Image 1: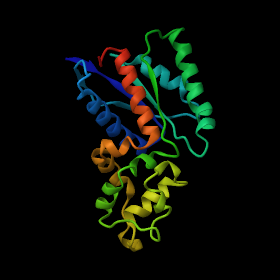
Image 2: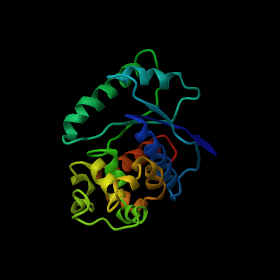
Image 3: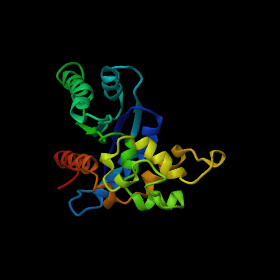
Image 4: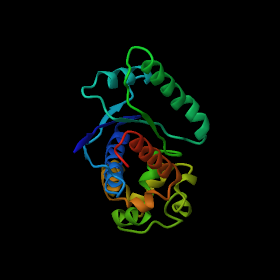
Length: 219
């Protein structure tokens, strides 16, 4: 079967842990549909931002890869103003990518936004039942910050805080758990149906499927 290679630029190490799994699972799920032309999926290569303005460096890194990826994802968080953050992050990345494509690095793969509204932790909270099982207790409004918004995670004002409190509700300081240890489990076990209820995730997945179709990986 035709190989499908991808790469991701993320903001930090916890993003790498989470998104490497989320992207791989989504691509595998897309490939299991009846519209798949059949492909052999490799685990995504991940890169972390190393500079204040990583656009040029990441473009160079991808251009140097052999073989080059078929599809590349650029992660940034939407924060409290998704459109402003898009202009600050996505627009310069895309401009650099297009300049390289028409300059010294022709043949760069398509670039897709990987942009949760607020933060990565909002996607990690998408499957509330899974969060509850891992916490071994259903978070209550009185115990967890903005628990009343867990069915609409993009409304959370501080997903990091909500996730930390959800995973440690009712625990004393000595028994608190490192939330980062649970990110791989949340990424591996979150149901696709629950993830797709999150608008920014569903938008990313549909854009990814469109690019795969353009590249001939989907019919």
